[in-house]
Image (cartoon, rainbow, N blue to C red; front, side, top):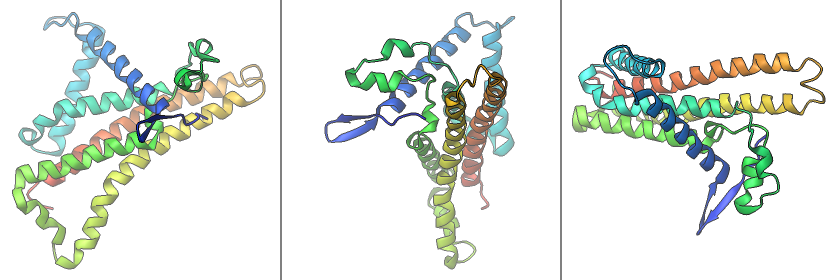
Length: 246
């Protein structure tokens, strides 16, 4: 499985592999989007433009299905970024690292450990990434709750009676935790099994290619589902916050 590589920056530390893979994911998304809009037209769109338009319409429908679209329209850009980022992040750990031989023995910044493995690593296979995304979600929940209801938003913590405050607080804390651990657990488990299959002696020679292909296909499906689940739950939690009833 992926080795945790730490960079020391001043008095702090960062997970180097997660950071580099996040940058790589951002680069891939940037290239994908630029290719999709380079020949932007209102006539007959290209294939990538069709894909991007479908994603925009899909996220719009998720918002309108869960809340008044006027209240959630300002979320569109963030939610588009969220679902695309999580999807591409989930897929990164399934890609063979064709550049791995170039970094074998390169000790600078521990690049041999970061980029010298057989497959890439998904940023979402690190709990720090998923926890950060979940924290953004809960911040948006509070921000939109206050924006639409003012101070009355906090009143639901003591409804129907003040004695329910601890329960509501547990529920509030549990939301980002379940978001983070669900996404992390699914992606980490998938990459772990891929690593185990690759370590089997003669795995790709004695029929291992078939289960590997099947598991990769299943992992793509799981990665897509998890990006959808994280996004739709973010919308649902915000919809609860902006609603007049709780």
